[in-house]
Every structure is written in structure tokens, then in C-alpha cells.
Length: 181
Length: 206
Image (cartoon, rainbow over all chains, first blue to last red):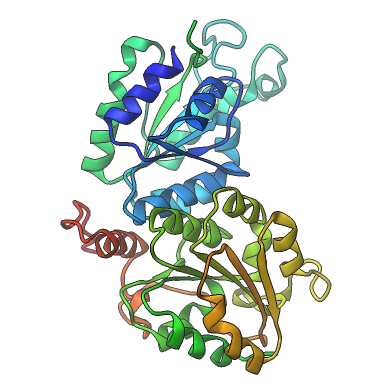
């Protein structure tokens, strides 16, 4: 998935700020944002901070999105709950999905009641991948998948849903964002 | 050491059209000094995330001062925000840390490093060019107008007496006006005020 195409979609949606922390999967998009003069990049020190800075930007009249990895998502629980969720901020969050393909192509239904505790330490499975979707469901953060460039129109539809329902919406990015070849 | 009254009364007098974001032990007392629609209580919110919320508002509203009244315990939870505010060049942010050295809301248990930690030095070390510490009411009041003018970000640590505020609630019976609405309603209303936009689709009927 080309990072440039995601950036173009963000611009079409009127995004003013991207707030987040980079990971290997989102590094190309961060690089593009760092030199973009239309959308401002705010790099934070921890993912919980991303929710509150983005919520403040929205209160101030802007249209931010959050861009974090699923590992940081798990750290950010109360930041999310107490700001974007509790304040009913229409906010899109891109969550890069570390471990999505670990151990093959999604070998395990990520349903905690089907887990064996040993799965969380299996070296061929990334425990954060097991925990991501159940966590999002538990937190009341609806989500969709961005698996390929054909899915990019889900960005604008997720924006519309966030506005309509006045709530944050997640987009799970399962493939690395690539630079221009 | 200042009383909360000595901290807040001059601030209410000097704030002009600034947004004021409060949390923890000064939330109710500020509501006794101000009923401005530009006040926002970070109450019933995320623990330790007041400074970063205020930072977001400041970045969205660069032509307006944003004053954050943060607790010292709260500041310790998100010290990284000092670096974020500097990196984001939030020139209109004035970040107060109310140093009472306790978690007042939960019964005044001491914060880590109480009596030893130097918040102004932490801010300076993060890159704040303007970082101040006050423990005398007279010097604070005298310098306050200057603190609230010019480019920031500005950091102001103020040594304040321990208080006895209990948990902060949001309900129709709260005396402070800005605690009578839900935090969602407050957030959406402040956005409307700051943008003079048409009413949000969100309406809190709770």
C-alpha cells in the first residue's frame, strides 16, 4: 500500500493534523508528512498522548487523525477512554497491525475465550496481534481493515461514520505503507 | 506558599480571552472565580492527560492563549508532554503546574519525589525557554501579566498549600457552571465557541 495514496486520501478528507508515533510500517507515511505543507505532523512521546492532543485539536476546530501501532494502542487505554471516547470526538485512528501475519495468514481466531494461555508466549505468534481486536471491541472502538489500495475509500467512509455517530473509528492497517518506487 | 485563592483570583483577572483548562484540585475553585464559556474542566476525563489536551487546543487556536492548570501528580504522569509542547512550538500555551506535592483528590498522599522534584528545571530541560517557579503570592501576582503575554510555551510552577478537594463530579447540582454538563457536551460546546460553527451533530440529553 503506497503511503502517498493514504496521504492523498487524508487531504481529500480535509485532515489538518496527524498525531502519532511512527513504527516500521508507518515510517514512509511519517516521512511524507514531515515534509508536507498541508497536513501538520505532531509526533508525541507516548500513544496515550496522541488521543488527548488529537481531542484538543478537534475541540479547537481542527480535523486531526491519530496514527499509532497496535502495541502503543494497548498502552493508551485510559488516554483513549477519557478523551476521544468519553468526549465523543469524531476521530479517525489508523492502527498499524504488528503481528497480523505472524505464524501464517491469521491462523488463530482472535477470540480470548478460545485462547490457551500458552499462545501468548508462542514465539511464532505475536501476542499483540492476539490482543488487538478483542481490545478494540472491549473499548468500544469500531474498526475496519485497510488491507490493500483497493480499500482506500474506507478512509472517507470511516470519516463519515465518525461524524455521523460522533465517535472515534479505527482503521487497522495490515500491510506496510510503502514508499514510491 | 500560595493559597488557591492567591493563585486563581489574579489569574481570573488577567486571563482576558484565553481558554482555561483545569483539572484535579483547582477544578472547583476555578469555577468559583470564573463562569466563562472558554473554561474547560478536564474532569471525568483521562488521568494525567490535561496538559496534552490543552496542548491540542493551543495548536488549533494559535491566535489565542491557552492556559492549563495542571496538578503536579498529573504532570508526572505525562512528563513527555513537555517535550511534545516544545517540539510542536506551542507559543500560545501557558502551562501551570500546581505544586501541592500530593494527590489531593484521593486524600493527599505524597507524589513521588515530593519536596525534591523541580518542575521548572524539568521544563527548562525539555526546552521551555520561559520556565518559572513561584512560592510568594506578591511576586506571582506582580509577574503574572508578563507570564501571560509574549511567545511561549511558558511554564509556571506555583507552590500551593495542600487542599481538601474530594473527587470531582459532573452533575447538575455542581456549583461550578462548567461541571454541570457532561465532558462530551462541554467538549462539543467549546468547539462551537472556538469556531463559531453551526451546532455539532452531537447533543447530550443526559
